Amino acid sequence: MSGSRHTRTALVTGASSGIGAEYARRLAELGFGLVLVARRTELIDDLGLELRQNHGVPVSVLPADLSEPADLERVEERLRADGDDEPPVDLLVNNAGRGDGGPFTRQDPDGIDALLDVNVRAVVRLAHAVLPVQIARRERGLKGPLGVINVSSVVGRFTVNPGGSVYAASKAFVTLWSESVAVEVAPHGVHVTVVLPGYVRTDMSRGAQEGGVPDFAFIPKDQVVRESLRAWAAGRTIVVPSAQYKAAEGLLRTLPRSLFKAVARRFS
Image 1 (tube, rainbow, N blue to C red):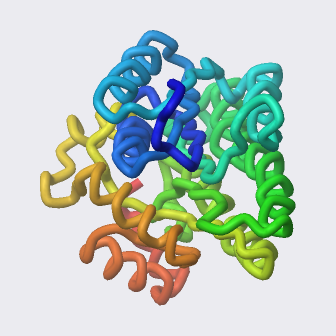
Image 2: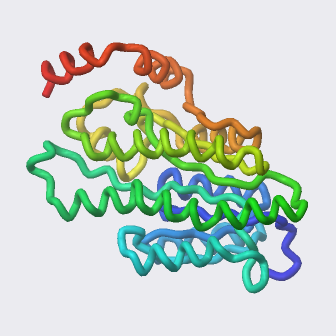
């Protein structure tokens, strides 16, 4: 790893597949060193080897289940590094998530806890670990983009979402919280961007793919990654990839709640 051309480091959660692996590949192409975080150790080991061979960037793997407090603390500790022993993290990509669904009263309470731990608690805790370090580095005169990308979902804009109530609420939280934190850290020259994709072909969306959601509703993983990285570098707070989801998100923000509830009752 010595002599690498990289000058920046990104930590990506949920990096073993799907959008997370796509972020890792794109960031490696851009010359970032990487810290890959995921539960599936073998997959991130393989991805790390691929990125080192193809792009010559340093890659470390940090196996972690972010619903487990001890694992979450280990990732937080890595994000607090300020260059003494390990390179500091210029970009945190909070991508890990759980998509458990079904009627709320039939969901496993432990599954609900795990979803909230990964989709909400870990996202907040990891950003809280890295942002003070980034602000301090900016105050020391560091140039170049610093900050966080939080992967949310356009479903968080729905006012009601039967069959996915906890998931949708977790994403609504991530979006609103990201917007507020972005305002707080912007004066320090640190960017927080939240990305709201629609359907993307990943392991998490397999149920939707098998459930008859039409092909045109899915957008490519690389589009989500490209558009969100551009938005983050430019200091934009919200990005909705693809024209169809931009239009849908705008409509969802203007429709009355009564209409959402009527439609939800009709199809639930």
